[in-house]
Length: 488
Image (cartoon, rainbow, N blue to C red; front, side):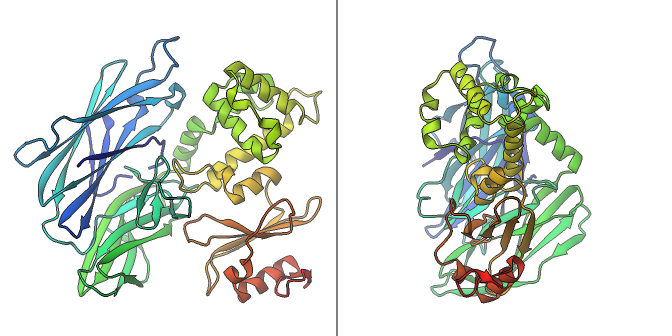
């Protein structure tokens, strides 16, 4: 049976090892997993650059661009496995057609041992232009030691509410990640997440070692981790992790995972790239957040009328969403039911109340807020859907509300404690916020604070351990080890 999971994302993305560069700039990536019933589960990712699409004529419908995807799988004789190609359509806001933006299509199907060809055609509804991509698929004849390697820009551990992955996500075991045809790191986003499955073929847990390295285009190894022990459950399990490549020069590289298991050494690799700062800034400028885009259009001193007047409905909604950080829910009630013009007027009137200097052309508080949101989206976003907006994370929320901390303590994982950060604010009433990366995927959670408007975690001291508590107590100058918060 052929399953299609329809997703849409504008992702920073590098060409993984099994990626096929297709005509007309489509890209395809195939990743295979083995199942005990001798079936190969195939995941296929196809990127659709929005540059291929043509916007409809002015006044036509809602102005969205539309493309149709048609997918077919054929065996080595050319016989199609599907009676009819699977076909579906996607709508894309015209405003999404900016530098480097693309859609991501995710497909899944099982095959038995053999050789196959995956074929995908994308057709623009306005111009009729079709772009095609195809890639070979090999079904495993026997259980391999490991699956193909998958790289991702964001990864997290599944939580209680994650029975179904969000749009733009996929799930492997207890891990949810954002797939990408092309993993593209930037100087502002330097972490590469990786995942593969290991297969033992035994009824008992097995221990092996795993090592990660980065190889440049000339084959020179630039970085290699020390071998680390990895337990693999009976039959097999998922192996994942992350590597921070801050400082890696721009260029194209191979990400290599070496696994020693059951007396066998296997290597799985996937190419990726690191963008230059100049290219990163150009992409960010072109894409931006909705608020940031409108700010650029209106100018640094744009009034509220011009600022929100430059936005379409999707951008207005993006500008309204983070207002939950500074407004009461009753103040935002009914916004969704408004017309576009009414939404625009709503936001103008909302921010008028925050304008502490109405005599100036600019609304300084509105500018500060949306600049903080834009920064939070860059610095703190994590993998949820198209990557959860950074302002929705705990660190992003605090940054958006109060700006940069007066000073900050940052610690990598040592001993019992996970990575943690302490933000201290000395402006106004002294406040501190303690965040911990409990799953190791960069999703820092607020676990303790003296801000009565925020909630911590009841067992936060157990999460950190005594050594980290002592470290934080010394930094803040208060005794957190006794529970009295007395001077340290």
